[in-house]
Image (tube, rainbow, N blue to C red; front, side, top):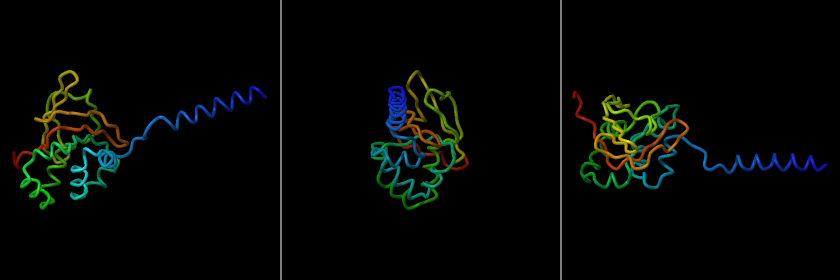
Length: 161
């Protein structure tokens, strides 16, 4: 009888500890939506119709500009992007790499983005930069990739360059 209670207690503890292991990863789109400091990006992703894509199988690596990063962009530029779905989509997909790249795996050099342009990545110790943006919060896990919060909005080069 004592042995049965012991086994029950150990089994219950194992099940409960599995349930209390913290929040489960969700899709990249849901990860963006869950971060209050990414609310501007989240609304632009929805406006561009990229939410379903970022809920897809991926994997994706997203360099996600914080609200503070968007605050540095001139209001007229943001308004123009919001009114031009093609340009908005081009800017947003410039922040996305196909595949999953954790901060520790960043190699110095160019990587092709989802929009087809190259993005300069660099790592020095714990510091990761993307073009002129610094990764502030790396490696936010998602079921279909990873999100890195950056301090600047990246603008793709003009088409044809």
